[in-house]
Length: 130
Image (cartoon, rainbow, N blue to C red; front, side, top):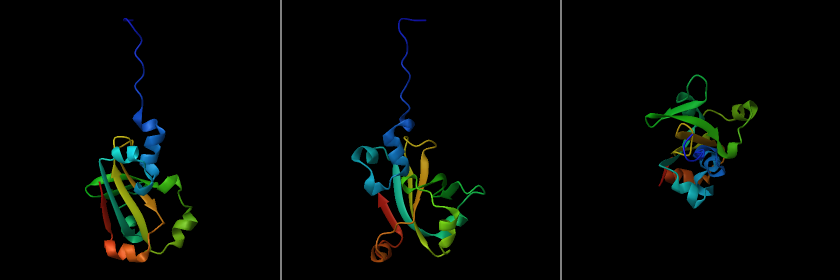
């Protein structure tokens, strides 16, 4: 029994902020969301390169020496038809991030949205954030 009732610990991974950290692109995260990131990297990968990094269930991507749960920006997953419309050389934005606010700590956020082609060429396929 004791002197008082213990309050349940807040589940950091069940908050609205954690949802944003898991699904929102870096540029749309609040300062509080960005502060929860331990590691973040944005790459522009060809569809064929993404397919080579997938597990057999196509739910996890192995990159940078670890496994990342695949999610889509804003939790807006394309249909199989939309996915298949993209050729193997099509570029897809991939944001890899780690955070204690994410169940399993790591996600790869995919998006068909790309910046201007000049910016992609200039970045040589890689951005580093925080």
